Length: 317
Image (cartoon, rainbow, N blue to C red):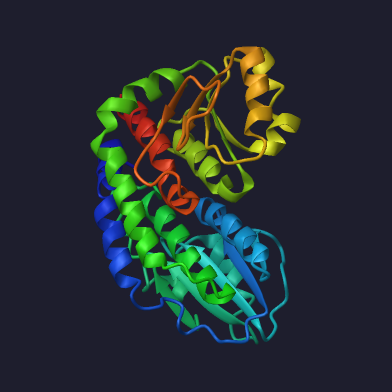
C-alpha cells in the first residue's frame, strides 16, 4: 500500500470510467439466462458494500436478491433459476472463493465480477464480467469499488427491465468525478479541517447509498488508519446519536434520506460537526457540491471520492 500511488489511482478515475462507459455499449451480462428467479451476491469488504445496495435496488424492482458475507457458513442452496454473483476485485479473496465453490458444478448460474478475469474466482464460472478498472497500484480498492457499483447497475437494468442507459450514467459519473478532482483546491482544505478531530470520523448515508458511508469509513481506516464507522441515516438516531454527547463528533453526511432533518436536529443540539456531500443541508458546517449531484445514481457512483481524497491527504502527511 502506497499513499502517493493511491492518490494517482484516484486521479485516474475519470479516464477509467470513460473506458467503462464505452464498453457498456455491449451488455456485460448478456450470457445470463432468462429464467433468473433469485440473485445471490457474495463478497467481502468493498465488494459486499456495493452488493448490499444492488440487492436492495433489485428487491425494490421486484427481483429476489440478497447480498451475503462470503464468510457466512451457508446461504441459499444451489438451484436452477439462481444467479450467483461472486465479487472480488483481485479475484483471490479466500472467503469469496470458498463461498462460490458451493455453487460450482451445481444447478445455479455463476457470473463472476472481477478486475482480473484470469484469477481464481473466474475459474469454472459460467460467465466472467471484467470490472475494467485498471490496476490499482496504491493497493486500495477505489476504482474497483466504483466500477463494481456501475456494473451492478447494469445487472439491475437487465434483470428488472429498467430502461435507463447505464453507459450514459457512467459518462456523467466520469464528469462528476473529474469536477471534484479539478476543483479540489477549493473544497478539500475545508473538508480536511472539519473532519480532523480527536475521535475519528463518522459517515452517514441513507440505506440506498449505505455503500457510500461504508466505503468512506473504510478509506479512513485502511489508508491513514484513523477510527471511522458508518451508519444508515434513519438508524443513526437509534444507534449513533449517543456519541454526539461525549465525543468531538465529526461526520460526513450524504443527504437524501427522509430522516436527514431528524439527525441534524441532534447534531445542532450537541454542537457536532457535519460535512454534507452532494446537497446543501441546513445545519451542516459546509456542503460540497459537484456536477450532476442532483442525480442520485450519479451521486452513488461519485460521492465517496470526497472521503478518498481526505484520506489520501492524511495518509501522506
